Image (cartoon, rainbow, N blue to C red; front, side):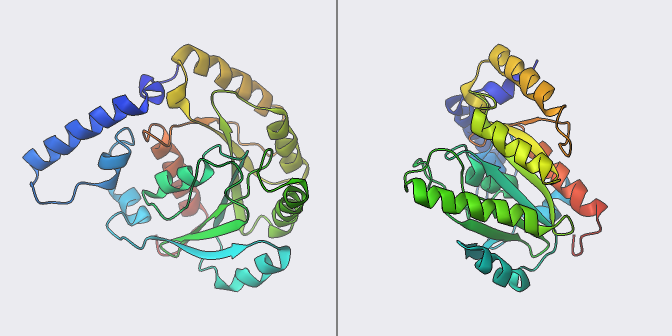
Length: 266
């Protein structure tokens, strides 16, 4: 059964946030700046010193947009401008919360998000303290820009994933809506990643909109389906970008992966 904080709605999270902020100002200092995760992601949890250093929590410019690519050629030209060879990409259907997840993972607000499906129309490369590149990919499925434009995005994504190579692209996090589970376009994308031998992992977002019993059932079905796919990491994450619940586990995983491959300047 999933932890209850995963399913706590945003209003409950904000009540917790206000309580934590009052306690922080009372116990620490009324004038001291309240930590980002305490203000916006009350269920993020305590951050270990090594994770704090990795995220650069105290730095306002820790996450910055390095390049926006709409064509394969632009991706190739952007390579030398990227400060790190360690790259993690985020994919998923339109309006599933990829940009919001990047902000929550890095405790930043640089990645632009919107309630309009298809808002992210290019590959956005973000740099986290110059030792990690986070890639926000165009959403597949429904998008408001028209069929021809969507086909171009699909070609861009397919070429990017195949040509990037394992040495740079370390993992693709496929974000799905926890309210619906794996849909057909999710399934097709997962199979494409598997056939392309791209390492990927599933993240169930928007858990705050689910009942604990429903979330547990959907997690089981997603987990069983993922087990049959080669190149899939057999651990399905659950999180809520609105409350911060479950996000820290993904941050820890990215940190461990970066540390494992010897990423510099950690």
